[in-house]
Figure 1 (cartoon, helix red, strand yellow):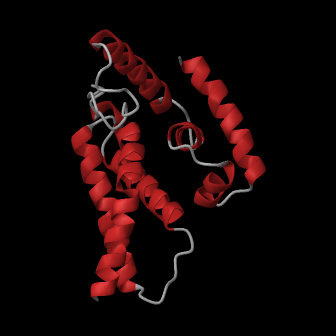
Figure 2 (cartoon, one colour):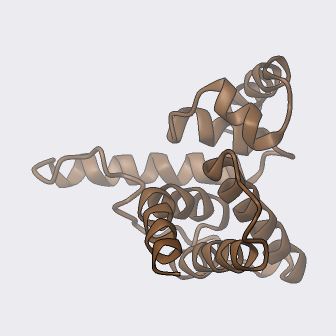
Length: 170
């Protein structure tokens, strides 16, 4: 059991920031993103405990699928109109900005991120996920294809269409 706990701790440490960032960009709320990220890892742990013989080939893909399902469940339970559209300033989203940056630059970047988040939230289907994974999480087409269980060509088309839709939304 101790080996299992250590390996799950490693999984958590390796993926928690990525899963949180993905969920945060979907729900635009720090508190809700924390809750849903926690739920993602809780469900994963429960699944692994219930199915000790199952070998998950791609843990990243498994976690992203779980997170997507949890976000979908969240929106099913709560009407989109009830969700606050306030955008919280979140250092994890803007992590590439050095601390020594000027405040006006940081404010402008936060405003741009809010516009991108709004445009992503208004995108249909899986296009927003594909754009986020490729450009924000820096995932390859192959990695995204594994997560969505689709051919790489389909992912390229989805990415192209998603960018087109994102540009239109901005």
